Amino acid sequence: MAFLNYTKPSVPGWHPSLPADIFEPLPAVKTTGHQESEYPPYEWVNWFWDNLSDWMDYVDDQMDGNEATTKNDTHSTPADATAYADAQAYLNSLPPVINHDISLNLNGTGYAAQTLTIASHRGVGRILITDVAMGDNLQNIDMQDVKCEVFFSSMTIDGNSLGNGADVSDCNQVEFSFCTFQECTNVLNISKNSFVKWTFSTIGATNTNFLRINGNSKLELGDVTQTAALTGYAYDADDGAIVTMKNDSFVYTSSTTPMRFYDGAIFSGIYGLNGEGYSSDRTITLTAGHMPYLNSIIETLGKYVPAERTLTFNFPNYSGAVDNNILRIKGYTGGGSVKFIGNGAGTTFNAGDRVEIWGNSCDLTVQDIDLVDAGSSSRYDIRNNLGHVYLLNPILTLGAVYPSGVVQLRKNSFVHMEGLNITNSNPTYGVYMETSQGFLENSIVNGSSYGVQVLYGSFLGHNGNTFTAAGNQAQGGLAQPSF
Image 1: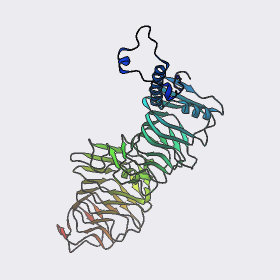
Image 2: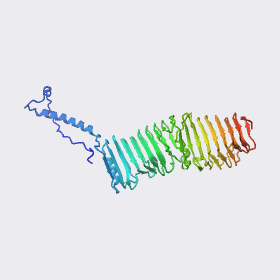
Image 3: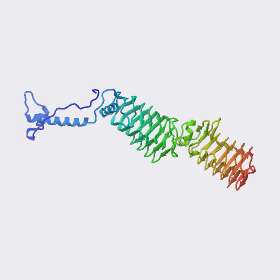
Image 4: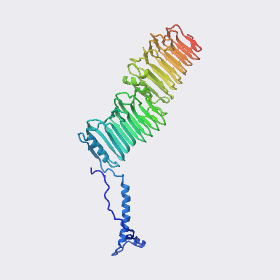
């Protein structure tokens, strides 16, 4: 491939002279140079060439590792079983400095259970690797110490349940676009000050974790397609790593812990974790396919909502379970508001599901999310909220229900309940309050002992309700106007 300076030009050598054969010219001779018709002694010639040889050795050493591309190049692998070996040989032949566009088109076979390795390059050019007509899939991409741009397009990586899809270490800019990763321990394993972009790509079947990232590295994530849930972490980050989500690109998992961020790692971008905040109102539109992994999606989105900003989750028409049978609404902060809005045609959780609204300091609205035939642990569990909570229009039609109440309030600043429909059930209490303030209106409330029980300094205002229970009770609390 003549377009590359693979070998330094040969330089003339000079036989090392004996010290007795070297004589440095006098300063006066160096000043004036040799005069016309003057013949210097041979010792002077040896002295000159010895010095020149030292300089040539110095320049030769400086050229080592600095060979560079001289023009753009495109290479296509053969369309046969030698394709992988040919591709790796071509990458190995590239000089250290890439200052042009180098394109590698992958055809043929021989890639299965193989690793494509790229190492020790730098420059202002780009290496573009594209699946044109690959007959089988690579098992791994390994990139080490690459300081030029590398772009992978339209490739499928099959980890064969043996390891990572891509290992990227100490690389300036790597991008995967329109790629698919399947059967990987970690789809991406990023370390040592690397920067990786993932765009328009697919998380396929049988992956354990999506991301392992550390060492002050950064991932910019956008336009993810996911065909199957992960079984491990969506994100596992430490040591100053940064993950930026650019749009509604959910990465979800069946694990109860979708993400781990510690030792200074940050989940950043438009989703506002770690104090960054949402720069504008955001609406997240969920599909029925997201619902079995709902909590892992919610937990990977930012929970700091600044003043005058609204984060809205629009739920689909859905009847079924959520992951681990609990919708967890926890830890939202800031001066804005968060809304979880059910579908008008019906958003119903069952199979023992409950909704936990815990520890939020911004205002929260949960509307039109029903619990029907959900079992003995089903309830709305609302506690330790500093912001106002608005519970609107849920239908709560339960069988053998949690004995302390269908809607439980503990240690809340204020909970406004409107349009509750607690019917066809046999709860001990319809609404149970401890150390909370609230208001109940235009609701139907049933309870075998009491429709409402108000305890321990709680206050409940109410208006326009229908109580189908034996009665209501304010015991150590205050209900106004009186039941």
